[in-house]
Image (cartoon, rainbow, N blue to C red; front, side):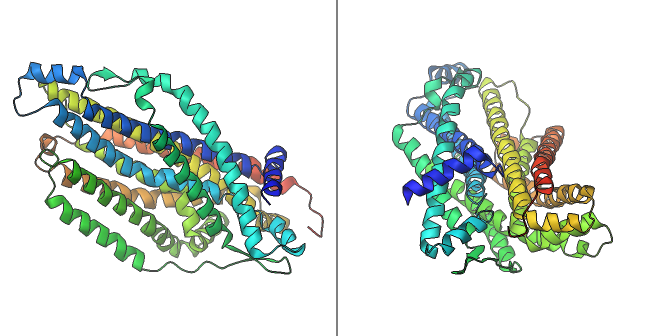
Length: 461
């Protein structure tokens, strides 16, 4: 079965009829690249905590601050890196999960054919998982190569007033293997979950299950996560807290961001439902799709939700004062936020691209039927953009205030608490870039839709 699955996966990549498999490899490559980068960066800060750089010790000596040591300050950098890692883990792994689900429903006809020749349901699932793992390994190999090639670029980035070296960003072998193992496990689980959306009967009939309406319990969990964070933040101080407190706070933030993934689809469904009552064809088509598939709509914009969350942090950055030590911290934190935003924007654009491509292929029959009924192509284009813009607006309306709330609670008792929120321009620019990238990614799937509309199908297909 492994040999057959391998040949099928390689054959699909070569023919690239739908383009989904190549996009899946690309998404896995980006997931691996970003995961290795985040893991390597966190490991770099851990190493500098264990052995503080001489530049940091020199700055502390020049300031004459008897209450700060290089080890304590480097430990603060590590804890901030852990919090940034907690924020990025969810969207990066969501991107990998989306890549694994990319062709699950689109392969329903081929899976039905395998059922007709005698394969059991379990064998079909196992074969699909093997194919996904092969695609994951291909993407991981490509992402690893790009990661190695990108290492020299880190020389232009400095922390602790000391430029990074390529070796700083390479984690130990066991950490890199752990990253690859998590990506492989996630891709396998996501494939199994994706195949649950398509039930293949023994007669080889692919039956799509009607999604159920999302329940209100998602909102309850989200509100509970905010209350837990607010309660935890009362006993947390960004200056006096130790490493374990930062680690625990990072876990709480990760849990809260996970609940954002729960409540996001519910909000999209809630906002889109009243807009179904419209006379505009493109809006009607888009809103009905959002109501019936809110989870898929969330995957389009989930990455940008975390961008809004991270960008809100920039509003609380103070101006660099005359104190060299504090000025260094402000500079390094600003650089860390820029790197985090860059990673988040890449995740958001890639996520929108692969999910829109998957929708175009999965809705091929519906698109062809509507076209033969006389629906103009501009209706599909309008629906595609509305399917991205409405969730974007809804998502940013939640993530930005949440990011502001989290940051204000974290900086209580620090010099940043009295900072003027004069970075609103940075926030607006970042959000506009994220929206532009998402719209561009949605536009990039137009060739796939054109191929669907211009392909001749036999009656018995």
